[in-house]
Length: 211
Image (cartoon, rainbow, N blue to C red; front, side, top):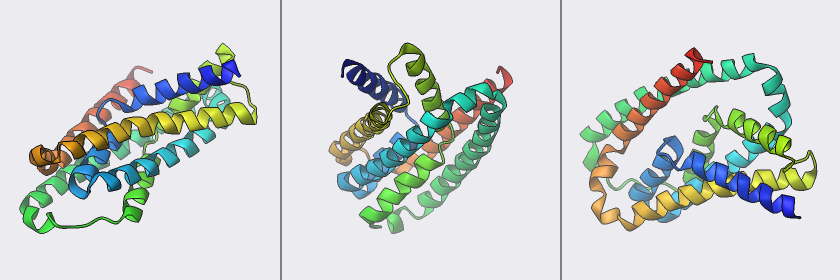
């Protein structure tokens, strides 16, 4: 029982810390909260967390394969470069378009269902999640905190989802509470996301070059 608690808090902390820095998922959670309300932000966060749990589950079963075949990770990084480049351009173009249509977009409503599936989609496009949780699984396995048993796998998956959701909820809650003071954030969020994608693109390229 003790090792299950250690596994949960270690994985929760790792997921929490990985999600804290401003990125595609938490900035979108804040954006949805500011523009569409706290509830939609929470629904978006649930969508993201659900996908993270699926990715963590997959990671448990492919961690050994990934680390015995480094070329697979190289391929994932190269795909990530293309994805980050696409979103850097996408959010920049979207920001330009929204600036011209700010008044028209002011009253647009987003359904809870759409918020959930937007979270699922964006989390699914984060190609570095599976290698990250595969690495965690390998480390926890070496430390003796996790075994390939249903109880341990379930704990690992739930903790990954819970840690991610906790951060996204904080982003959602913070920006919702500051809604009357975040008009500038709402207007410029796509520029911020574009810049973040560019930063991630540069970081990923550096990691590829120095692997």
